[in-house]
Length: 407
Image (cartoon, rainbow, N blue to C red; front, side, top):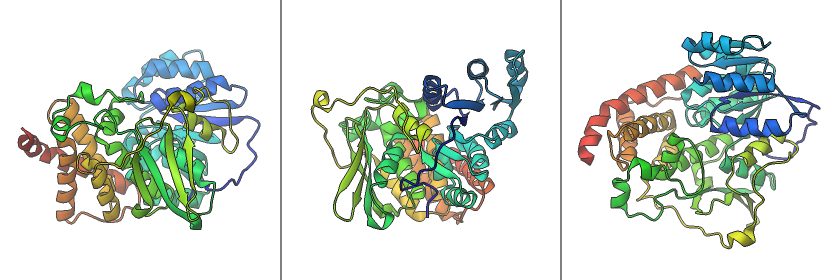
């Protein structure tokens, strides 16, 4: 079973849909607010949250007349209150306030708080049976089993908001679960798709941040360069759609026009295509079960000319292999995978390790975790957060020897 509605089981939406955006000032939040701005008559904003950008949050709160806003940094509460003086918007700060924002009575919640910090707020929305547009990878990578169980129990509807999983969501509606053969997640290949392994090893931060197709935040852009992001998406797809690792394939598609495909038992392959613009999958989630007008560029296949596809290179991009291994291992291994990667990426950004050492640190952390006998099923958010914290410490302790080996 899945909390993702795989068929067109439409429910009539209310005339005006109330929405909450968790992570309103990030890149996903920006795209969501842009869509809300274009369809004000259909949506009313209940709550907005941000990590530390008080002025941007206050500006959005005033523009959309939000009923409640929360800033993650508790030390910024006074500043937030001052920025909202004279308005009717309530405000709060800290983790409890972010959770409160998610728990408020909005029909639809965008869960775009990055990192493990996004897990508890997303669960607060899930537990009250909301429709949750999920853009936080950690909810599934770190806590996929019980997150989806909680969604089923609460009759919450989980809508995938990233481009690849949203593409699969749309394509899956063409058949039944028993007719499914496999899903195919596409990958651009990032900036190093054609590079030699020795050159990838020595890649600079500036080179890693030059994504050929997408404009994203620093962390996700580096993950795309290493194909770690595609590994995370494989894990997400497994939990989101209740798929075995063997039912998920990755195909490198440099043009980023085909975002996902589904193969059915009659050998039909259904694909979702679109220009590389995050507003398209977000618009699909925002309008679901209907469709709303999106501002992305119209797809002109004649102008594009050709679409090409390649098999992924697991040797040059070992992050993808590690993701499959962690998914098959289970029992917290995917949580360790994600935590170690975050430590590794931060170290790369800080100049402490080479680009090629990112995957080596992740692999070493998972191996050390397994050798120590730490694998166990996760049954709560606190379990997942505890494993995440411990895995970060383990990765940090391994960092000097990984950096030394790479020097």
